[in-house]
Image (cartoon, rainbow, N blue to C red; front, top):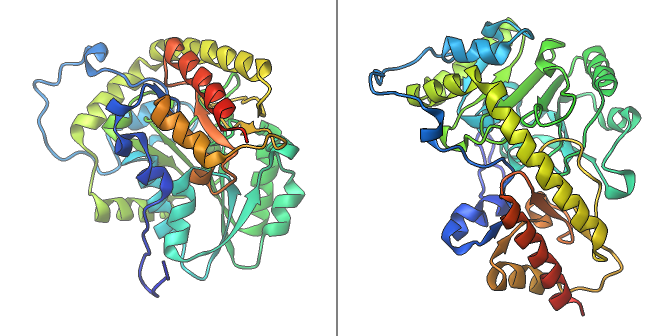
Length: 373
């Protein structure tokens, strides 16, 4: 779509148009397309909202909720509750960026990280990750992409869709670089707690860093539509708050009560979630190692990975995805959702139960075998 000056140019993307919700969950037997852990059932939270007044809430967000998110890392005033991580990303992009600005974005990436700057009409360069380089990059590669009008660098770690990580030392080097150049760093850290050694909350390390996260992916609460952003710059946070107030004033008081209750018992809930994820990762690892068709970089964080059908396999990819979806009723996230070769597919191993994961992986193998030319 051609950008009109002064207008945001919206477009629907394949990841939304072809999503499991659009296709119909009732038509899917093995759902490996989800990038989250299993959905929580409200009754399992044992939360009584009978006496909750359905009023407006604090515009920054429920104070107890912000305190639990801030923890020992930042002041709760540095936390802004948003409508999911997508809402945070939109507020950040429209607050910081104009069409004459340049943005460097890690690629492949979660679609909202790409589409908000694109809708504004920003100049964009991709910091590309490749399987041949183990989905890693060095600082020199990033620095070479920076231009005089670079306003923002957008990274995601643990990375979506690859599940790869950077070290705390690498994060510190990146922050030192962006500070020296007067650039903002956006770090989408939605899967931060889904790793053996979580990085520090990046927004606690510098006023030039904005952290974004969500209840959707690591907590299994996508239906309450809550996310947040963290930044220590008072003036910038005031702008972000103004953006939120203009778009939706405040969050749902029901959603925030559920979110606050969950975070108060987070350690208890996360123990069970992590056990489930670890078991499924081992099943996935065994499947990759035992078949002749797929290759990957084993994920080190999150609940997703980005394997590829081997390059030397002559396969009809359109037939493969058709057979997989319609014959075996198995859903994965194909590479074109992330603007890369359809030999890649994002597999979410945190969402399905063990039987669903095993059945879905077997279906992928069968669909490949039936589509080889």
